[in-house]
Image 1 (cartoon, helix red, strand yellow):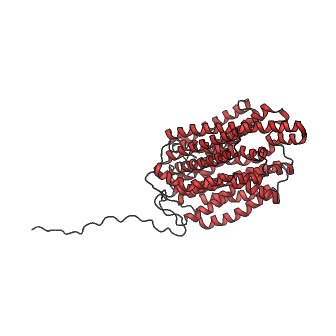
Image 2 (cartoon, one colour; image 1 turned 45 degrees about the horizontal axis):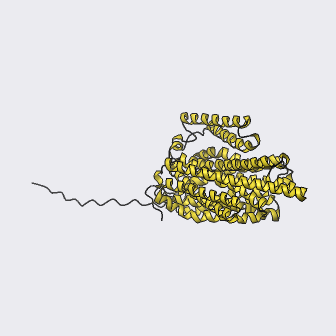
Image 3 (cartoon, one colour; image 1 turned 90 degrees about the vertical axis):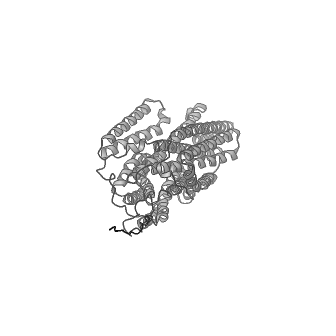
Length: 528
């Protein structure tokens, strides 16, 4: 007798849906498949804190003359008022990224906001240049805590399909500070004095902190690989390497690029980085995953991003002097003339995610650098021919190319990192930006200083502003001759710097097209 077993046909598996997250723990898992329901509000809160950082850095540059007069600061002290924050930021980013991965990104973010606000209060109360330099360095410490934490949180709460667009918005906010900083600084300094810059920071940060505490979720329990004792020795080695690198770049125009002190400091930086790499290979809980950094979806992107900020920050450093000293505009007028940078950044931001989804990171980043090179070449031609419109148009094209490049590269670096290494990846991403920008200011600024030194008497060649001040005091034929020589030397230096920028960007763009690989996070996603 045969028994026939009747069974119902098996139903196809139900597609996995993103579960509703519980109210406290944070984003649903895994972030690659579904994002946090409040992710857009989280992004707004994070961008508010980031905008304060970015605006503060650039606003101080407009206030330097007032600060120098009020605090009786020397030329060297004025430079360090600007660079102390950059030095602290660049030297601590990698370490703070690792700390954020271990103890929680929201905790580190809120602590960084508190440190930056405290430093702003102390800066407003400073009575000597040394006090202001110290408080600016403390601002750099707070910035180093904030920046990688914001990027890591964006990486955690947005699904991979939406990550390029979220990073594009983050990049636009960071870039807006480049333009809004001088404009805000000019208005505040003219109306209320330079101390008002730091008071304004505190007011905005207080609102940002409340928003962060309300909408940003607490970190879930760290995943395997993110825990372990922090490598303090490794943090000291990498911080020392960045301090030596940035300090050598800042001082090289005065000590000589091939001077003994510069070469010794550069050699020390290489030795510290080598020791850091050796330690990371042997450490049980490394500060930085060298396998992630060595990936061809990571280090070529870091190089391209550094080149983008080298061009943008170096050219902005020179064009602010060109607009004020050569063209005779006030600080507020010069800031308004730089608005094409913001327009260009905003104009391409919403397109970057779509281009990355369709063409991939490699093609997008390489194309961005080539566009940037075209903008720099247009600027060089406009400066040499005296066509003012071409200079501003070239700046807008350069800014657009930079926006495409850095947003695509951020997608590559964060998209190629595992979720538990997002803080470290964000730190390396931001370090590439800051070191590239510092190199741009130092190299292109050093080029301008070399032109002035070669064509003007030594006591008149400290800066374009100093030379023109001497010319005003001389008056008459001698003053007019000196002013013409100074503006001519600076204009030639600016044109040469723009041409060098174009060549460098084109070369790195070609290298990016050959070496960069698209990370898995950008494959198969077609943004809308």
